[in-house]
Length: 128
Image (cartoon, rainbow, N blue to C red; front, side):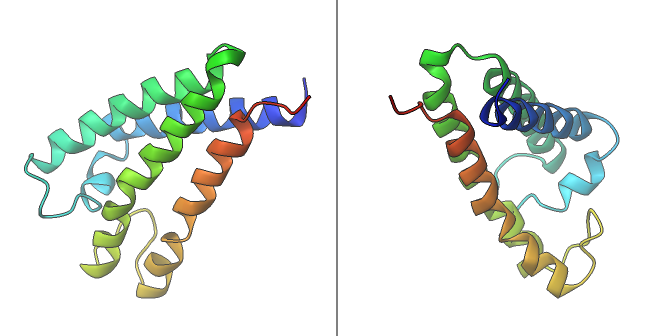
């Protein structure tokens, strides 16, 4: 197994673990990241996004080679779609996941582009 496959499977596992934590141990923590403008209840948003992460992580980890770049693009899109939650947590100074200072919440904003890059690079087609 090469480093790209290990990276892809690790990303899938991370997404599944994060999704499970949405539904269990970190449910309240994730509610801190739901922007006020989301029209659903905060807990419903956390549950739905957790289910989406579990499904997406599974797809990232087990997708056939032909589908991996598409799934990677979907994962990158997902990371972009949840960015407003990270931004809202920073703007509203909501604590969660040890992000209890403005500096930590601000630094967290730079994780989304890294996650997007991870999704794209670990699933892109090999050049022949």
